[in-house]
Structure formats: structure tokens, C-alpha cells
Length: 229
Image (cartoon, rainbow, N blue to C red; front, side, top):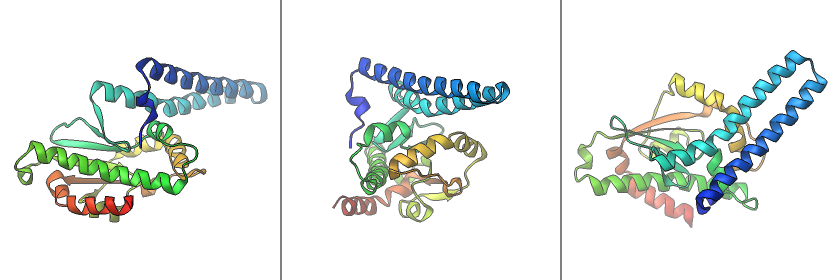
């Protein structure tokens, strides 16, 4: 599966971002106008501020992800799994954002196919990461390099099979998730092709040594082949 955004030229990418920003601004202006017409000024002000914050959070991944890729602070391991630049012997993995879902999914794709592609994308990404470090480090078993990720797609049972161990989700991460609830709602709705409210109680954080994940390589390859068939 291909992210259509990266098939565009640089000028087309910028134009696409501008068009989206204008569309969201139009929604913002419409909501503000209706608020000031039908409710009290003080309530209209709160509605306007809330609306602006929500739309800004929805728009953020359409700028943050491409700019992160361009700057090298983010990279794709697969269309649905991204990795931050290694820091302090830790690689933080991120599942696909609203930006990726928006540009990867076609309207005709059924929900089950979308979910299958996201799941396979996560596995492909892990395999890519394992392969990269197998090539670069002859003694992977001695490496202390770790990976960490937070996901509402992968559950603890599946993660354990991938060599990932569940760890507590830190407070800052939870705050970020709560602030991005609307973005998560839209992403999950795109994935399921129907309104879907994310259950933040089912968002899990996982961590593992890359060496331990590498031991699961054969299992991941077999699982990916099975899912692909």
C-alpha cells in the first residue's frame, strides 16, 4: 500500500496542505458564525476557541509527519509504522497517524481490508527494523538497543508474540492521547469506515530489547505470509 501524498511533487504536496488548511478554516469560520448568531457571545467565544484547538490538532499530523520525514527525525519502516531517530539507545515507534490513513485508504477499501493492511504494516515495520540492525550489528544479542511504542491497534497478547512486553503508559503520553482524542476518533472511524470512539483504557505501551524481538523474526515472517495469503 502506498501513501499517495509522497507520490506528489513538492509543490503539489504544499498545495494539498494549503487546500486542507483552507477547508478546515472554512469549517472554523462557519462554526464561529453560527455560534455568534445563535448563542451568547461568551459561549460563542468558548466554542470558537474549542473549535480552533480541535481543528488545529486534526491538521497537525498533515504537517508534522511530512516535515519529520523531511528533517530525518521520523522515518517509515512501513506505510503504517514510523520510527523516531534513535536517542539514548531507544527507538520510539509510532503507528500510522490520521495523515497516513487519509492518504493510504481508498474509499472503496472495505473495513476488514483496511484493518488487515494496518496490522500487516505493523509486522512489516518490525521485520524491517530487525533486518536493518541485523545487517549493521554482528552481535545483535549483545546490543542494549530498545524499542518502545504505544498503540490502540495491538493488544498485549499479540504484542507478546512479537517480543514486546507491556509497560505502563506514562502520564505525559496519556495527556497527549487525551488531547488528541478527536484525531484518534477520526483515525479509528476511517479504519472501521464508521464512527468509532477510541477506548483510551485499551491503549497500551510496549517495550523490548531489539535482540529479543529479533528472536521472533521467523514467527513474524510466517505470520505475515499467512495474513498475506
